[in-house]
Amino acid sequence: MKLRTIDGKEKSCITVIAACIEHIKEKATYRIKHMNKDIEDVDIYWVLTVPAIWSEQARQFMIKAAEKAGIDMDNLSLALEPECAAVYCRNEELIKNKDKMNSSLHSFRPGSKFMVVDLGGGTVDITVSEVLESGKMREISKASGGKWGGETINKKIVDVLNEICGQQMKRLQSEEMSSYLELLSEIESAKRYYDDEDDFIMRLPEFLQKQINVENLTCKSGNNIVISKEKPYLLFSQEMMKYIFSKCISDITNHIVGLLEDATEVSEILLIGGYASSPTVQTAFKKEFAQKLKLIIPQNPEIVVLTGAVICGHSKEPITGRVAKYNYGLGIRASVDPGDRNLLLGNVRNKKIFHLLIEKGRRMDVGKYVEGCKIQVDDSTQLDSIELYITKSDNPEHEININDFTKIGTIKFKLPQLRKPTTFAVSLWYDETEFRVMAEDENTNLHFEGIIQYFE
Ligand SMILES: Nc1ncnc2c1ncn2[C@@H]1O[C@H](COP(=O)(O)OP(=O)(O)OP(=O)(O)O)[C@@H](O)[C@H]1O
Ligand SMILES: [Mg+2]
Image (cartoon, rainbow, N blue to C red):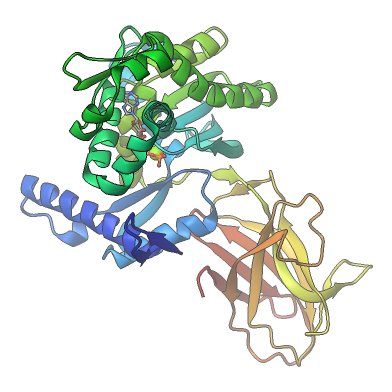
């Protein structure tokens, strides 16, 4: 994967992400060592958070990038952002209860089912989980979301500017890059100040100030967009902003309304992420959901994941399971014995068939093996690797094709030379960072384990 800079230079994605992680790591290390001079690099444990809707490959990619950034794998774990958020909130509840404060809240108690809505810059990530008797959390339906984060507001404002100053905006982008970036940063900070009681006011870069024609502007947008007398400020009316926000927010709330129709047992919604700081977003959520459900908006929604990740890092307590987003299975050239459904290994002449191990929607318990399939082998078989595939297809038992199936990696084995034909029971084990396959020789009861390699 390559990324391209605005001026056309290419860099590999992993180099860029590793550089970002390294930068943050250095800043954090500096601050930590400044607070306590006795701390060494090996004392620092890193928790890297990722959205729940990311694929296994994307998670693995982040681990590789962290490794490249110089983080020791023994001191790193990956955590899912909604889980960190829930851990943070449960922790807050425990503290409140201990101090007998606000104990009427009764959130995140065993048995409660809640939805975490993470409103970020790019994406909105939604998960539904339940609190178990043990206090641990378990995801109960697969994560969903979309590109409806806070950046959609900025884009809509740029669209309006493109409409009113067309050619000038194009010139700004192609000839005055620093002014263009200044404009984007003005939009961002004006948005963060905006609450729905006032007009939206932003400063224009000098280049645009000179270009805007006041008569034209009034003619095109009436009182909805006004430029200040000496021109440094552009003002959007409340109605105009209401329109922009409501268009962006309704994509999110409509999706959630749809999810809640199926998840009737959900009693709490936890709203987090930077975009959840917006008073307009909070008002819209209260209007839509507060009467039917308990809506929890923490005081600083943008630091909830971060703080939760720190708590997770200290407790190192994994969640107990999540829900498979795809069908997972093995890609093997084999035929199926119609009697006992065992696989009979074939050769290159056989078609490569998908053999389902975990079906979409099934709960995958972290750290536990899931029963798989049985493979019959004879003493001449060289079984040294198995390919793992995913598919969203509803009819997965199928010959593998590139449109419907994605190979997520290869699991390599070291089996001994077999002396007689046997059957291997293959099962799959999962945690947030890797898949393992275990094969048990039914003749000898010996186990063989392999770890998935995502990038070959
Ligand atoms: N007061 C505010 N009003 C409106 N939007 C805000 C406010 N504060 C922050 N935001 C928006 O929140 C977003 C950033 O949120 P957050 O830090 O949770 O995102 P992220 O985790 O970096 O992004 P993603 O989850 O998409 O990877 C930005 O779009 C920012 O403009
Ligand atoms: Mg985020």
